[in-house]
Amino acid sequence: MPAIQITTVPTSPDVFKASTDLIKAAPGHQSSFYGLKVEDEKIGYFVSVWDTHEHLAANPHHAAIIKPLAGNPQWHIDALNINITTDPLPALSSPAVEFAVFTLQAPDEATATQNQKRITELLKALGSGLDLAAAAHPPCFWGQSGEDENKFVMIVGWESVEAHIEFAMAGNLGEIVREIKTFARVSISHSNMTKD
Image (cartoon, rainbow, N blue to C red):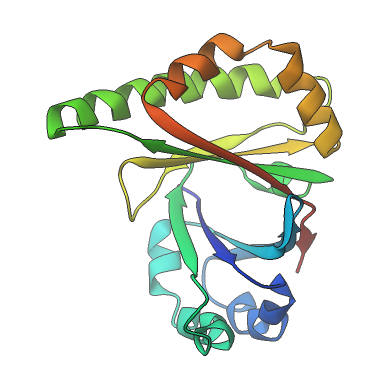
């Protein structure tokens, strides 16, 4: 099962460029992508794609990649490891990449388990609908964070940010999104990614 790591940093992702050579030859590494957040160009994304989560976890160079950023104590570095079931390269290679993060709200363990099951069903339906959008670059993909079981991430490839906004405003999948928002915080951003 493929795995990706999404690292969000408060700086240009170009700081990763020198370090990415370290992981190119790592067993199981497929490719890496980086780009600025369209909505806030002070934020950068770095996404690495791996054959499996085991390859990602065994990568001995992860610390070296993060090291250029670790010197500034004011920077918050957020890394999410996600197992996925679909080839992520078409979406990540698209002209505009949408990052949708869903953080489940659950007052107790029983509700958390129920919400995790329900969002899995809803994200399957949402993904199927997004893949049919005229301006999409399917397949989109999604998965549960390995660090926080109440956090899910969906990544969608688009022809442009404007095309995504136009599709969202048409409300084709509004019912699904509205239901998700009843029990999850939703954060959406975009990036024009470069393959390294």
